[in-house]
Each structure stands twice: as C-alpha cells, then as structure tokens.
Image 1 (cartoon, rainbow, N blue to C red):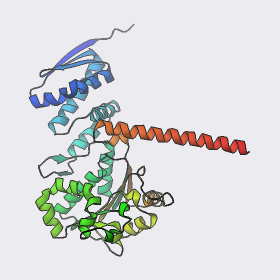
Image 2: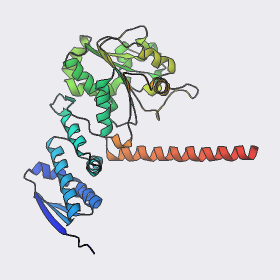
Image 3: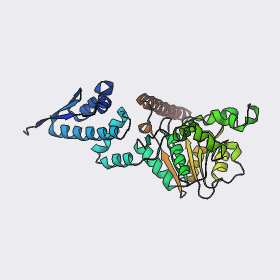
Image 4: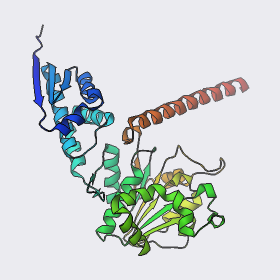
Length: 339
C-alpha cells in the first residue's frame, strides 16, 4: 500500500491590496481551489497556508500563483475566473492564460487595460482581427459589444479606419423613426446606449463628442444603411437577432474596402413577430462556409458580469432544453395515437 506524502506550504503576501483581493468574499476563492484539489487552504492577515497531499498542494500553488499574477495585471477576480484558471491548468493549457493576459486590446480613458477575459472572448477578438466580417452570437454579459467597441476605438486611433459606424435595428419603433421627436441622432440614441457607453469608456465625453461632430463616429438605425457603401470603416451592428432576412442581407452588402463589420446578437432574445425569420439565424446558415467571414459562439462560460448572471442564463437554457424535450415527446405520442 502506497504511503501518501503530506505537505504544508505557506505563502506570505507582501501587498495588502493583493491580500484583500485574494481573501475577499470570506476567502471563497481559496476555498474553491482547496475543494477542487482536495487541499486544506486558509488565509489570514497576509498569509496563505496550504496543507494536503503533495500533488494537491503543488496544483494549488500553481493556481494561486496564476491568480496572483492576474491581480497584479489588474484583472478582476471572480469565481468563474478562478474556475477557468483551474480548468485550463488541469488541461495543460496554462499558456492560453498568459496569451489572454498579454493581449491588451485597448485602454480605457483612465488607462485601465482591456483584455479578453475568457477563452470565448479571446477567440472572438482573434476572429475579428483575421476577418472582414465577424458574427458574435451568445447571451448577454459575454462582452460582445464592449470588445467590438474597444477594437473599433483602437482601429480609429491607429488610423486603420476613418470612422466608426454604430448600427442597431430599432425594433420597438418598427424602424419608423419619423414619428419620434428630435433629430435622427436623438431618435436612435436610446437604441445605441450600450455602444455609446463603451465608446465613452474609451474616449471620454469630450473626445467622443468631438469625434461625433467630425463625423468619425456615426450612429444610424439599420434602415439608413440602404444604398450606402461603407469604406475605411469599422461597422458594428448590435442586436442583430432583431433584423429580418432582407435587412441583414442589405447591411452585409454595404461592406466596402478596408472595412470591418461586426454583427452581434443573442438568438434567445428575438423580438420580431412570430412569423418573421431572424436575419441573424439565416445569415449564419447561408454564410457558414464563406471565406473571410468568422463565426464565434459564446456560452454561459463567457459571461463576465456578476456570477449570478451566468447562473440565470444556465437555468433558462436548461428550462428551454427540458421544454423542447418534453415537446418532442408529446409530438411523438400524438403521432403514435394518430397512427
């Protein structure tokens, strides 16, 4: 019978702020690591104590070293981030964590670096860089819009494009914006708020206003894209699940030279009438094999909002699967009776 070797390690955290991050939420991050590897991990003051079998302690040390590096790189910790680190290290893919940390997409107006924070986000960013058109499909909170805006702001500052164009279907107004008060920009602003928020983060209000006045940042409802050719532009279509087949075809064929198009949407949040097909779903099907068009699907694992958001998305997805399964069985029973 093999004798298991016990090991105890202690880590002294020299930086008080780092210790606060590690021990926040009643040291829950340390508990998650300990439970995963079967080690006894405790944190008090500025000391972490790890006790357990040799392999459990070694793995725990590796993960703690990585999340300490994340804290030093100003990456906000969350339970999901800690679990991602453990998963990648367990799979021997720890190098991907370093790639994500090294990939600074842009900086906010306050100098904070913007990085992909999940594997799905890293794939999305790389796909946008490689392709002229990228479809980003997935639930709310996965960073689709924010990362697209960050890349657009970088391209504009770097003079890779001459303007950023923000587009969104105004489904609630049925695209009949003439009935709303104000000029065109005032009419579409409520629909483009998430895109504005991202650009405000990059440029700040003064520079954002100046760029708008110079025509380097343009906002428009989808209906206003008809008849245009968008050259040297970074174009972002948000909430694309609410486009019709005709609308998204019209939009995609506006692509001009030296331009990029990002088409984002969540196919579980379609607000179109029941008898109208979503242009996003149709475009994915039709264009799946076309070169220079990338497709990225996000999952609940890519949610970077509060951990509870991912749990909510998971619960709804499970409920939808359950209902679809039951619906199929009911349909089968009905066919059997009729047969």
